[in-house]
Length: 552
Image (cartoon, rainbow, N blue to C red; front, side, top):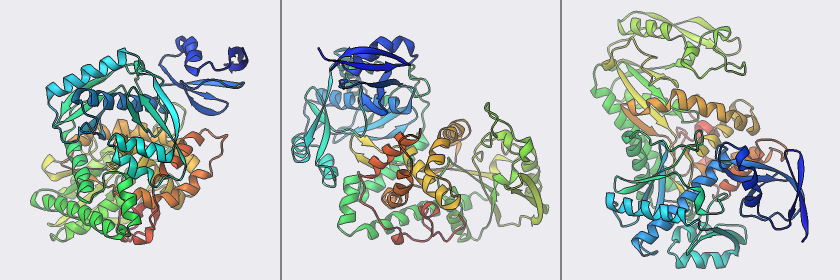
């Protein structure tokens, strides 16, 4: 038998040509804390079901890696789709849609079916049976026309619409028993890898809980997040109202010349939501502090400006305040373990000074407001004074805005808390959702290049630490908000695409950020581009692509 030489951890071994990466991985699994999900062979990511055909260097990817975790997640979704079809008994009727993530789980709906506890239990039992049977997941390349016919026969019209705009003449299709499906990304070799899951009913849908990337060997059930759920459903309903549930629908509208109409409707919907929040603030007569918090690239600045305009329509006079101006001096900033500055933690702010200033303002005093100089790393007093009148409100924006420790001295009735984030509800198709973090990362790549001259490589390299700061300082407080606002426009990735692609293409194959850049480029390839000149000047999207009427 022909052999191949595979080098692992500096040691070269011979294997029969055609040995799968899964067979090799089994011998090394004991050396890894978490389950191996894929490999990197000669610099390329390879699925475990793939055979080794030539000599090369190999390393392993586990569930604790972003690539491995997403591979696990996609495989679990495919098993869920199969379980739903088997339980309901009709592939034409059992159309499952992965709507969005909530906490550690994935909320899915079944077309025409309102799930209850009994149905969820049956689906869970079937899911467990599929896992126990270790059913192989087979990957095959099909000509595009043949793939479209396969999806038509399975009632997957969403995939038919998506493939209409595919440039390649071929497509990879995965088969799990009698289920043929397409997934954006890598898959595991069989069902046995998904041995930790929980399926339950949630608001008439199915909620699938999986382990997290941080602890992929544990199943941690999230606390209920009803406010976040309602905000996501509102955005999903907006999309359905406009006839856009997935990228194929969006591309159809762009090519039909209806994109300008859709942009105006989307912007009007957002403006009506902002106006509704302003009305609620006005009705609470004791409110003096509007506290706005949200993760990176959520559009906080544009939202704060648009909210301020709406507040003025009620006779209120808003004053913007950035919590960044309360940073402690650079030399007093806490450090991370690697010695770098930790600007994300609460201790990076002069919390006591903030509460003193806000209390004095609430008492009607005239206060000199600080301004942080990011060049010198010092807080300065530049003669900017503020005194609150009867109709004045402070619009305070910063990542710690929802944390009670940030505003401990202020009466609860004087604060109105708003959580803002870019919560993507548009899907590639019914089974391939668009991660909220992907939308925010693309926003930040484009904005950082435009406003800071930062490369896509730098932005991607920092993204992990940014996310860690959000997990610690923002997400735990989101359900404490009085209102939530979703800043995503359903059309925006089509607008961001031409700005992001050149930046991502600049990342070389030898750089650690290459795999992420390649993944994002492949993802953007699904979208038909939209010219940003169509956007209104106050659009939140302009905070990232430029041309905003606000100082952003």
